[in-house]
Length: 106
Image (tube, rainbow, N blue to C red; front, side, top):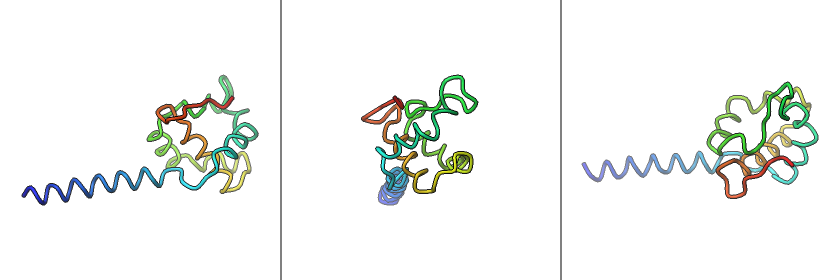
């Protein structure tokens, strides 16, 4: 019974680590910051129509859930490529409130 519990806990831990590693993977955060300022900030500043949204608005886990649900919502609005969206997501994820480099958009 202990062995089965250990295997199950290992599989759960592995699944959590894998999902974390896949989060916002493959984007260029420096390019993402530039693209965010250029395409997103005008609608996502304090008092703007999209509501304030900066990397510090969410934790990395919250950004993951946000990208899954709404990540593509702004793509058609801002007319940026899928690669550019990935770069913006990487910037937001890498500088989330609980990241090792929390950052605003400047």
